[in-house]
Length: 187
Image 1 (spheres, one colour):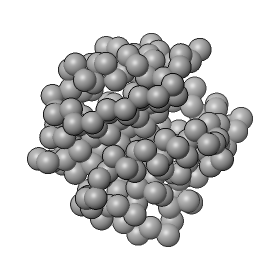
Image 2 (cartoon, rainbow, N blue to C red):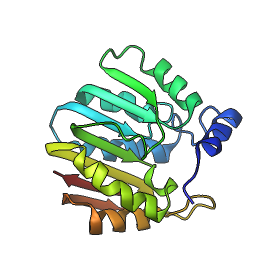
Image 3 (cartoon, one colour):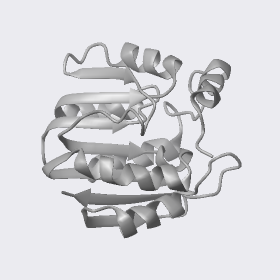
């Protein structure tokens, strides 16, 4: 079963940074690898799906002319808005994904630590929506924690296997270590 908004609201009510995005060495290594996957391009219009408190979005903003960062939890959205207030080209919205997937086209879509919160059927249904939201030549970067979680419906490995098998985009890059998997797809 896909994790619902109430689950995430409770996490942020208990801790404003429930995954230690600001301080975790794991997170910072993952951010660096994600930014490397951007290549040397500048992206006109980008989407970060599942932005949490905006730590990665702040780094992505430097590579985009326009960035839409979305999250399911209102507390996360508020924290991200505060963090990103100095960036006039960034909007932060509360949306329930994938049902409220924003209209593209996007030159960049980043799904970091998001897709394993959806069950298998929801992720499968979302794949065409995700692919269709990319502009020609656009890039989708997916990066997820690999070890099994006690609450997530899917593992990062299952998510990435499904993306490689069923996402109707060219698979251009992959890397895995014992902590995370990253896959890059181009439209």
